[in-house]
Image (cartoon, rainbow, N blue to C red; front, side, top):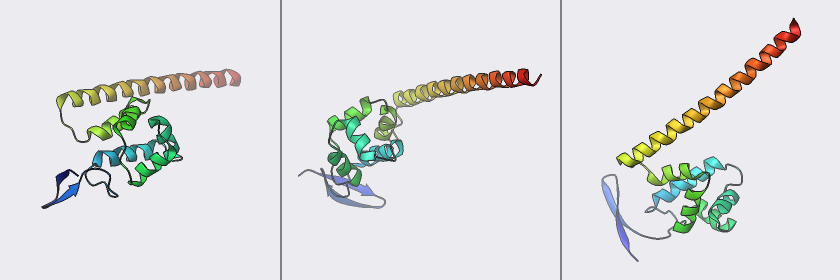
Length: 137
């Protein structure tokens, strides 16, 4: 089995690639599982299984850190409606300019959508206020 030099702090150790109970060499999977737990706090394994097109048992193994998610399953998560948070977890602390631009465009678009939703809500409240005022007169 292939090995990789894993550096942690001032010490280093050799670890095996592939599935391992602690998955020390595949940290991106831990990030993606954390996203799944935040997105779906109840029924995490079932939601994760449905989005990645695998069995619930497979998703339970991923969440427990007992198996590694396949590339096909990770790709399904990225292609889902919830794909962006998974992509952010996958990219980690990448500082490539193209990735920084993607994040900025996503964040600015989300902010625009949030502002539009708030403006709509404000208009609804103002309309309700006017209706209440009419009833009082």
